[in-house]
Amino acid sequence: MLYRHLCIICLFIVIFFSRCSTSADNNPAFKSPDGYNLNKPFLLKLPVELDEISGVAFYARDTSLFAIGDEFGWLYKIPLTGNKPIQKWKFSNQGDYEDLVMVDKVFYVLQSNGNITAFTFDDHNQILTQNQEFPASGNEFEILYYDPRLFKLILICKDCETDKKKALTAYYFNLLYKRLDDSSSINVTAIANMIGEKKIKFKPSAAAIHPVTNELFIVSSVNKLLVITDRKGQVKQTYHLDAALFKQPEGITFTPEGDMIISNEAADRGVANLLFFKYNKKVKP
Image 1 (cartoon, rainbow, N blue to C red):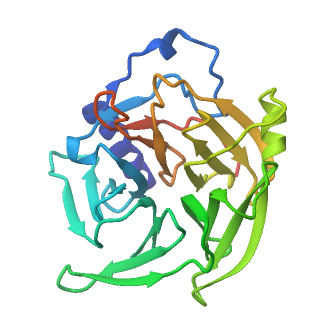
Image 2 (cartoon, rainbow, N blue to C red):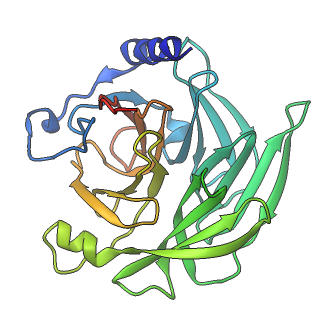
Image 3 (cartoon, helix red, strand yellow):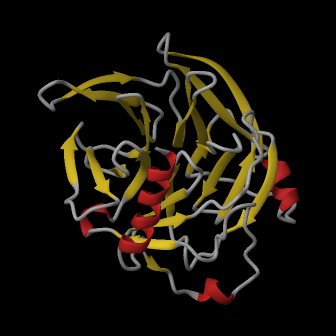
């Protein structure tokens, strides 16, 4: 089964992705995490309807990608193999939707104010929804990811009133009890030190846990950074991103083998796209 899945991924790369040709191909200045080459992704252009693509979630069952847009409350399913059309379903009305997580058969969509819309499909392919409001106002979020060890969704602040410039708060939403029950913080000063700055205003836009290394990968569109932390948010590594490739990265997801997919909004430069980075790291069992 694993061999078959790897073959599908390879076929997906060869057939559907064109090699991205930009200044990054000849620019060794942009370093990459172990197992990846951030300078040479495979690229898939998306239709205009997805120009404001934000959250993404890989669906291993049929090698597809679920995605949401930023405003109109649609869930999209983008096939990555076979000549199949993109499907879509309406899950909510107009809003400011930032991220998407899929846990078993349930989808969780984050709004910028921290509210979460949960929905699944019934036997007739109709969407059943349930809303969860964030208990405090004055907060702005773009990140929602899932930690399977904790069985919790985690929201990372982009701009929260209680945060100071030296840290960002991460809130934990317990899926069993359907409530916030813990929090932690990400040391922004440590990020600044690693990139050689005295201080930065860090505004993360997407995050996901790597399925092989169990590290947290955090993308910042504003700062053009990839930050890698442990599961508790302790900063381990930082990488500058080439703005020619990462014009507006708003979503990140992984295949079970560790291949990384990052979504870019159109950002008034062409169309939105998906960047696919093959994971080549040999990890001992």
